[in-house]
Each structure stands twice: as structure tokens, then as C-alpha cells.
Length: 324
Image (cartoon, rainbow, N blue to C red; front, side, top):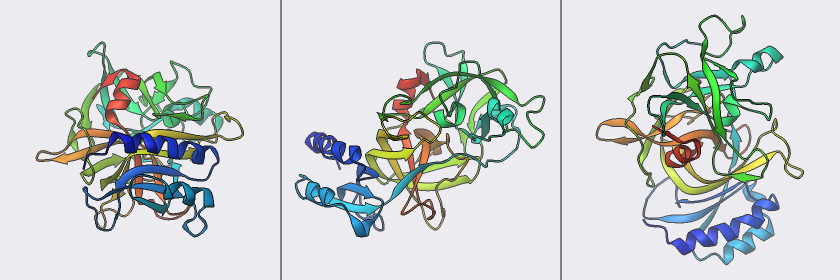
């Protein structure tokens, strides 16, 4: 189902004051009934922390919206650490990665190296792609920071762990809203354009509602889902970033939302999976990237992480000047 442009324009006007007031946790256009998904039955989906106590301002705003509206209890959170410890050479996607500077401070901010990508201006240059909150994490990041794979062990960074250096990033570091949480490191070791357990990557594809997807994260491994929403705006707390106003939260707009493919998958992603690439299924398997995973969603904090949030692949390519 094509989404009328006037609906998307109305969505932007609808959500802005509600995010500013902290009344909603997210908003997208997606399948109305996630238990019986129909890509032709869409609605504006408004996510709130507590379905039993929806603020009056949210109810009043939805009553005026020119499209079907459903209110869903869901919160979003970035997924940070606890990945596997296997070293992969040549390096490939779907494996653990970290900036070594954090281990020296006693902190472990780690995640997943999602995919091997090329520089758009110079295809001979290869990068490893992950999230900003994995490779950069705080405002002290700097080009040239050492990146290691796998994550540092209890013994620290071992000889041969280094795979490259932080090259560039995209994230709303000094503003409350943005479109991407991503970073790349310039690789110094051999690499292959494949995802562990999935196989080769052959570029990107535009996403549609209800399409089946998969990701390989360093913590949960291979998981499966389907696209439940598009044009998602979602808020998550980045506690190690500078506050904007009184909050360290950031709202990313234009995102995709994924629902678990149960019972094949119980949770879509968990701590340490941040930075995974999400791939769409076609006749040849899961081989085209639709997005970069950076957060999970659940009914309440502590509940099963049944939903994933990712930035569209084309946005990641544009913001980082890369190509899958």
C-alpha cells in the first residue's frame, strides 16, 4: 500500500510537539494488526510507555489525524554490549567489534561489525560498518581510534586483534533529532563482503511492509523478522552523550521497525547486536541490505525484545558516503 504524501506530512506535524513534551516513545506508519499482518492494512502507529495511561494530549491529537490510528505500548532502547569473542580473519560482517580505548578505562562498549562496505568515492578502500554508539559511543571519539575484532577479552587487546581505525561517523551529537546512528572504521586487514551464517551481500533494496528479514548479531546470532513499520521516529536514551536541553535522549526519524518472526525467533536483537545489518529475503536468500540495526523495542523495559529498529540502508550510504 502506498502511503499518501499528505499522511507523512501530517505525521511530522503530529509527532513533533508530542516528542518535545516527552509524551510518546515513537511513531510510524505500519501494519495495523501485528498478529495478522496485512501490508494493505496500514495505520499511524503511536507508541507510548504505558497503554493504560495515555496522555490526554495524545488522545486528542490522534482524534484529528487523517488516517487510521492505533496506540501501542512500546519503548525503545539502544543495545550495547555482551557479544561473542571469536576472532574472524578475514574479517566479515556479523561479528563482535569494539573501540579499544574503552577497555583501558574498564568499560566495555561493544557491538557488532555489521558489514564490509566500500568508499563511494574510492571503491578500493574498504570499511567495517557499525553504529556510532559502538565505535564512537561518546563525544571523545576521534578519527584514528583503534578498532579491534573481537571485543577485548579479560586479557585485554591481544596481538592481531586490531583491524583498523575509526574513519567517520554520523549521529546527532549536539542536536535532539537526527537520521542515523552509524560509523565506519578503515580496515587494515583482509576482508570479505559476507555476513557470518548468512553469506555474500549484493547491495541494497528498498523495503516494503511485511517483507521477511534477517540479521546476524554478535550476541543472538541469526534471527528473523518482518518489517512492521516505516517512517518510524523513535526516542532512545544515549546516557554517555552530552545532554541537549535537559535530556540525553535522541530521536531518530525515518527509521524502519521489525517484528520478530515467532516462533522461529524469540527476540530480534539484544545487547551486543547493535551495528548488525538487516537483510531482506528474496529468491536467492537474504542477500540485500535494507537497514542498519541500532535499537530494540519492547512493551516495557525488561520485557522480551520483540522488535528491532534500523536505519534504511540508503540513508546510511548517503550519510557516510559508502556503498554496500
